[in-house]
Each structure stands twice: as C-alpha cells, then as structure tokens.
Length: 423
Image 1 (spheres, one colour):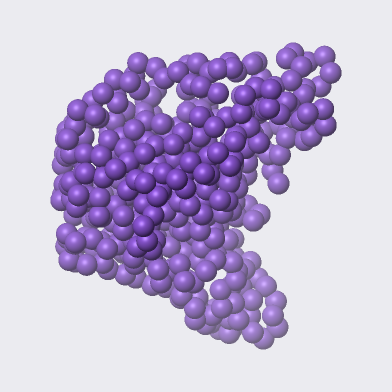
Image 2: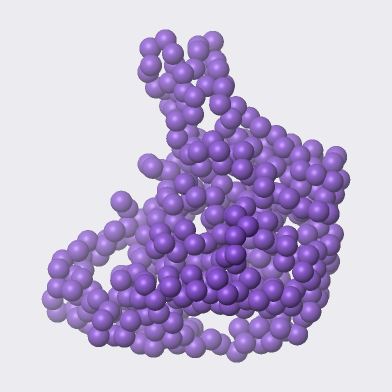
C-alpha cells in the first residue's frame, strides 16, 4: 500500500533539509530560539542528549525510535525531520516505514459487508495481519545493529509486542475523527479507499490501536501520547516542532509499577541545567479520620494525556528556562504510605523549577483526572471518590465527546464479526 504525498509536505521537507541546526529549523517557522534544550544543544551534543531519553543499556545496539498513531497524523513528516536533524548532528540514521511491509493484495484479509452492500468487501489494510511482521521486525533489528538511530513509523507498529520491545521511545499521535477524515480524503492511496472504508474499517481500527497502546503504556514507560490536531487545515512546521520538542523533552506516564517513579529521574539528565527539582506525593494513611489500607487509582488515559500535553505547552510559554517536564502517577492498587505521584522539572533556574512544580500540582488537582476507590483497614470496604471523565479500565475507548461509533456487522474472510469499538 503506497501513499502519494502532496506538494505541501514536499515543500516542508525541503525547508527542513536546508536547515543546519535546531535553531535554524525554528527560524524557518518564525519561532524564537528556545533558551532550553534546542538552543543549547546542537551537533553531537544533541545526539548524546537524545540518547538519554531511553534510559536503555550501553550495548552496541543503536537507539530505536518509533512514531506511531493515527493515519494522516504527520508520522512521515516527523520522521523526515528527525532523520535530518540527527544526521546533521553527525549520527548515522535509518528510517523504516511500515507501509513498505504490506503484503500484496492477494494475501490481505477481506472484510465482507452484509449481502447486497457495495462494495461487497474491503481489503483490510488496517489490520496488522496485512503486514509482514517478521520482515518488519528483522529490518528493525538489523538496522539497530548498524545505525546510531533507527526510526520506524507506521500506524500499526505498536500492535506488535516485539517492535515495542525493540524501541527506546515511542511517540503515538492522536487525531479526532473529523480531522483524520478531512486529511485522508485529500490523499491518494493504492489501492484507493472504497466508499465506507473509513467509517467501517479505518476509524474503528485506529480506536482499537489507540486502546491497545494506552493499555501497553501502563506497563511501559517508553510511550508518549501527543494530540496531533491543529486549528489549521494542515500541520505547519511550527506545530511539528512543538511535537518533536514534546517527544524529546516531556515525559507523562501513568504506571502500575512504583519503580517507574524511581527511574523517571534518568530522563532528566541534562548538562545545561543546574539540576532537576522533584516533588513527590504518597498515598494518604488516613482519610476522614479512618485508617487507609490502600487506594485503587484509575484514569481516563486519552483525556489525561491531551490535557497534560496542553499543560506542558503552557509551562514552556510561561517559563522559557524550563528544559524538561515530567509528570508520573501510579494507577492500580497503591498501599497507604507508598509513593504515588511525582513531578520532575529540569530548568536552568532553581526558583523557576519550584514555581513550575507548584503549577503542575495545582493544575493536576484542578483537572480531577484521577478516580479513587479507598479501602479502609477497619472493614476492608471500598468507597469511590469520582474524578472526571472516568471510564472502566481507564483506557478510553469512546470519542472525546463520550459517544460511541455505531458498530458495524462485517465479515472477515467470510466470517461474521462485530466491529470492536468498546471492549
């Protein structure tokens, strides 16, 4: 399956390739030079700083970065920008595109519609079964042994646990349905989208891929979810660079394991900062005069990631000296007295970092992102304290406005299936 990109993307790429440094990229789109990470780290120093993102071992394997998420969210353009910048910094870089590993049409599963529908079936190019998994995985492994950086992009790369395990950091781009559809109808696909393919295959598949990625992220700190929606018709270079800065310098993570909070500080190693300021919160021992045994925490992951991305952006506007922002919260059962919530800020000014921590804590509480179920020692009963926009299992599987897409009765390779939009 091949995609033809428009003149806008090609022109954008030409501008990026002419730039010789991160400040030059920022100047292309009229941005001021950041006093933080991008302005102070160039060339091979940038290469070293980026390698600290993963916290991975120091073996011979190069770093593997993945750009995944919704179709038409800008994955390919972001891949080109990252490749160009890393190569300008002196690194060897190789990009791998999932679309190059699609099977030929005769090997792709068919989704049959109800009798009498036109078309009678769709080729399911939005299922991981349409991809040569072994070929993709082997290509990533081989490239990681040869190049300093391997960047793999595709809308389904997070569907393979073997690919996730190979990655040091994963950017997952999110879009709303209207934006995705408006962008998709302006692209040329081979084979072309048949009538109904977006509604019945593309969008339900993306929602399932997002749900699966959110589930994986609770156990894997490599993920960063970013909202790729823009007010303009097409994302410009300024917006693309804001996503890249978030990818490099922000860490927002909801995790089950307490060790993730301890390991979070590794992300904030930065030579140009005075240091990293931390603020921790523990699960309370008592509530309303009663002794707490444990509290079960849950969250609407998708909504929370979007809101905290906005918060990180506001921080950078208000406090230009901030280099990195980290927000980590445990979910699941957390015993009384255990570490629960950590905010980590790297800034060139210690006073500024303290103000940002206070801002993050206040805003996190104001958003009421967390749902709590308290279990007391005296009787072991649970009492729920509702937060905002909570959904069962935490991983959002509905639209942002709370509505579910209508399920479609389809057949895959002749077998009747129900489009999975909720479970």
